[in-house]
Length: 155
Length: 485
Ligand code: SF4
Ligand code: SF4
Ligand code: SF4
Ligand SMILES: [Cu+2]
Image (cartoon, rainbow over all chains, first blue to last red; front, top):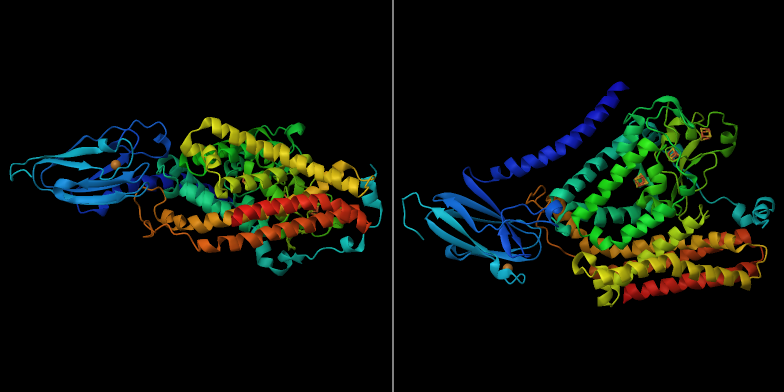
């Protein structure tokens, strides 16, 4: 009988510790490994309140008192293969990088939308929300700054 | 006055003496009995739910704030709620309590075991429990706290069912409270007197098509150990403090099956029985008010969701509109309706019926308590009718959220982007109307059943029933108006 008790307690501990560990692993390691090696994964969340894109996580516990930092400039290196994971914390936004003819793609609240590109030339790549999502829509933009490695001209 | 004696001493009409149909499940499915007798049975059914609710909590705190993309909202308020109200309650009594993970840590602290049982001595039992083992105050030994707790949560339902964090905090607090109370008080005090879910589980379990009962009350009378309530080395003392020898209603049996393990006379079995037929006695004002609160909440939700009044929707929707003044009016109005107006109407109908029937030897209180049973099947079926469209319209979220439970961009099942698609929305009223009419039917039938225990004269019975029946009919018509539009 004793082994059943031990097995039971063990099962509970596995649930209590294993689940967060599994999720953490997926979030930090598993997710990145879905992409080819050396991919630069950037998470961008659109926030209507204040009108900004942020690299912070907007999740349940910080949603109410969040003060997300604006992702105004995101540094990239020339040659980076970039995957942008787009989220929306509130309403329907959309995403575009006009210079690369990327988008506009819709970013519905709670969904994850991916956009990929190669930063093969140095310079500034403006990204922005492409549809009037909220009063502060016009502020929803930022730049990828691609640093040159001297091999090619700018965009 | 004297009514209780009258019921006890006078011969009951034939129709009532005839026992309702019962089918002994354990006798026909011995393996099922073997299963629930396993010491590890309850642990094994709780464990998956512990995993799920733990995931829900994590998702509430660390998952997307968007409700319909977060598993805690979709699985709890769309899937679980529907299964609970439309399947488990009517067909499984308090089967949810068998597998509920909320009191798990409390039980663990109290028993210091998750599977095994320990004999010994603790106040009132033959098991060794840990903790202070205090007695719960007598004044609070009713479901009033649950009534108010549920009404309170229901008032904030617009937040609860859309904001993952709010749901996570509520469930987290319930788990902590259950654990804390287990350390201080005896047995499942939390479940008996605090758990806000428990109130309506207890009420609607009365209608259920299953019951766990002692097979032969005579055996219980002669039983010296009373192991079902006191515990033994085979099973814990009934966590709900239920004595099987006297149990005649489902309300406060949490179906933990400890008594099946502990009864030395093998005198407990699971029975099937007809819907809304056997347990028809409400035993206190707390239970009557519970019935009123539940029915009126279903009503008020239907008004807000289905009614044509936009301003009311805005008032109730504190989650998006932040109009606290309007919300206060809505909350006060809802509470007034559930706690005062409807109970007053019901009371009035009882007085009227009593007067019309010239029922001088039946007290108003007794009529009030007894006739309130009509609100039980009506309330349950109104809730089911109300919940059916919720699952039909929002069921597709279950598919997408199962694949991406936290809204992090996982795709475990490949269905993360399963589109939102209402299931046969045009059929919703066709499902709702028969369910509601069934509620009316079972309500009236219940009324007749309890009435015929009180009155032998058919005219008197009929007259006493008319006003409450009219009230029930009125409620049904209002519901129908909202459902059909
Ligand atoms: S009463 Fe509440 S906490 Fe207790 S088992 Fe039932 S649902 Fe769970
Ligand atoms: S232990 Fe069994 S026989 Fe004894 S009172 Fe309880 S149910 Fe009846
Ligand atoms: S009577 Fe008590 S011990 Fe038996 S199943 Fe119900 S709650 Fe459990
Ligand atoms: Cu925008």
